[in-house]
Length: 434
Image (cartoon, rainbow, N blue to C red):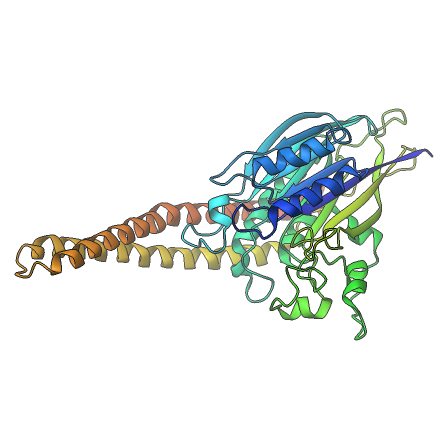
C-alpha cells in the first residue's frame, strides 16, 4: 500500500484592527513562521485586515501559491485559506444568527460569523475536495442551560448540513477552524453526529477523562490539545478562567475535521483513497522571537492526514445520524431561546413606543416653557430619545423577527429530520410497509 500525506494548519490570528494587541508584530511573525513551514493547506481565522493578508500571502506564495481572502459582513469574514493545490471555486455561507446588534462588546454581530468553502483539486486523491474554514459564535460559554448557546447551536447545525451535503455528492471534506466549543459540548456533538466528521485530535490521541493533580500546562497541551485560555499564552495568562479551563489548563476550541465521500465505489479501479489522521498537535506555542508576547490568543493546531491507497477490503464510510436525545436537546434549547427572543423584542418595542410619547411631549410642551436655559436640555433629550427609539425599533422589530424566524427554521428542520429518521427506522424493521 502506497501512502502520501496532506499537512494542515488552523490558526485564529486575533487580527482585529485597533483592538488586537501587538497585531502588526504578530502578523509579521506568523508570516515568517508560515514561510518556513511545509503545510499543504492553511486556514486562518480573524484575519480581518486585507493588508495583513497581503503580507502573509507575499511571504508564503512560493509554498502556498493559491489563496483566498473572503469578503463579507461589515468588517469582513476574517477567514482565509492558503493552499498548495489549485482552488477551483469558493463560496461564503453566513450563519443566520450571530448575536444581537446592540451587543457590541461581544463583537460577533457586526462582523458576522461565517463558514467559507474552497473547492480544491487535490491531485494526491484524484478527486475534488471541499475545504472549510469556519468560526462559530463565541458568546455563551460551556456552562449553564443550552439556550445560552442557541446561536452557536444554529451555527453548528447549518455547518453540519453543508459539510454533509458536500460528502453526499462525492467530495472529500476537510474542515478547520475555531469552533468556540469544547469537545463535550452539544455543538460539537451536532457536527460530528450529523456530518459524520472525524476529529483529528481524537483519532490520534486516545481520550482521557482523568486529570492528574500534578499535570502541568505544557503537558495539558499535548494531552488535551489545549489551544485557548492556556496560562502559557501571554494573552490569557492571569485571565479569570471558568472551572473547566482551570481543571484542564485551558480549552480545546480549535479543530481539524475530515471525512470521506459518501458515494460507494464497486470496482477496485475506482475505489477512492481513504483519509486517515496520523498526527495532530498544538503548535506555535512559543513567544514571538525577541518579544514577550505570543503569536495569537490561540495556539495553532496542526494535523497530518495520510492518504491510503484503495484496496478491495476497504469499507465505505459509515452513515451517521443525530441521536434522538441530541435532537431533543437542541430543539428544547432553541425553543427556550425563541420564547426569550419574543419577550425581549416585545420589551424593546415598548421602549420604542415610550420614546415616541416622550418626543411628542417634548415637542408640544417645549413651546410652553418660560425659561430659555431649558432648551439645550430639551435638545439633548430629543437627540437621545431619537437614537434610543430608532435602536429599539431596529432591535425589537427587524432583528427580533429575524432571530425568531431563524430559530423557527432550525427548529422545524430538526423536527422534520427527526420524523424522517423515525420513519426510516420503522421501514427498516418492517419493509412490508413500503
